[in-house]
Length: 105
Image 1 (cartoon, one colour):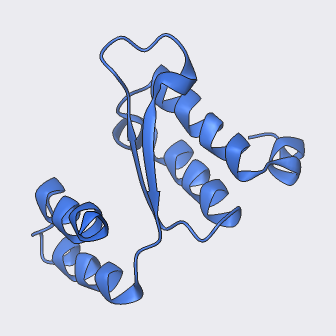
Image 2 (cartoon, one colour):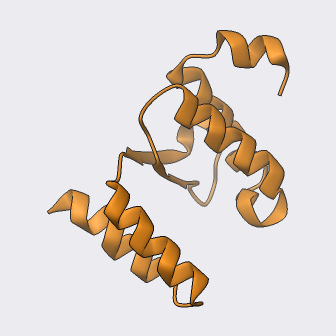
């Protein structure tokens, strides 16, 4: 990412940057983990967000078509997820239950 963009970026710019990257590469974290990490840092640096979910539709025509959810998850939940990751027990279902289902409740 160009330094000028990072310096002037607001949260909505960071979200659009992630939407654009996801549109171009739906499996961004798996295919370009460094880029995904940089974008995650950008989101976190512009807010208190520490959990994101971006969902591209089947036929994405523009970056804004990529849906997203943002959240701030407590440290205890993050620590529990890290323990599960370290023990090889972290799955999408575990993350969904710990992060997104708890927010919906």
